[in-house]
Every structure is written in structure tokens, then in C-alpha cells.
Length: 61
Image 1 (cartoon, helix red, strand yellow):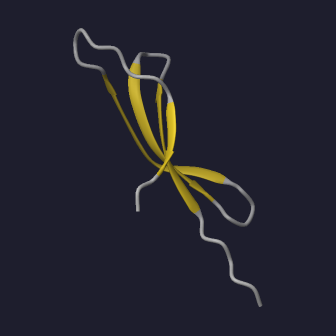
Image 2 (tube, rainbow, N blue to C red):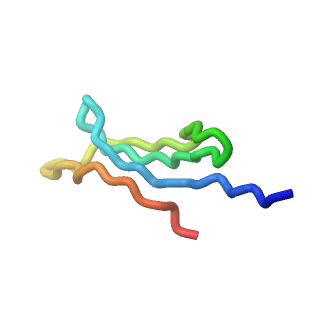
């Protein structure tokens, strides 16, 4: 029997069509590559500020 690989998590940020800065946690299933986003937060940037660029990074352990 082999060891199964752990699911992976990534933090993803983007700007939606309404100008909100959004951050989500994406879980990537190690068996079939399916992705789900169980956590999502979005908010408008403060007055006079623009949301940053879209990014994807591994979730810190």
C-alpha cells in the first residue's frame, strides 16, 4: 500500500467586476484535482486606493 498525497491549499486574490478586492482559500483534492473554495472574503478598497494585482500563493503552514 502506498501513501496518499495530502490535499493542497492556496490563497487566491483577485478583483471582481464590481471593483472589490477578494481573497479565497482554494482546496485542491490530491486524488482527482477537484477544487473548492470553502472560504471567501471580499470588500471594497478604501477611498482613494485601488485593489492590487491578482495573485496565487500556497497557504502558510
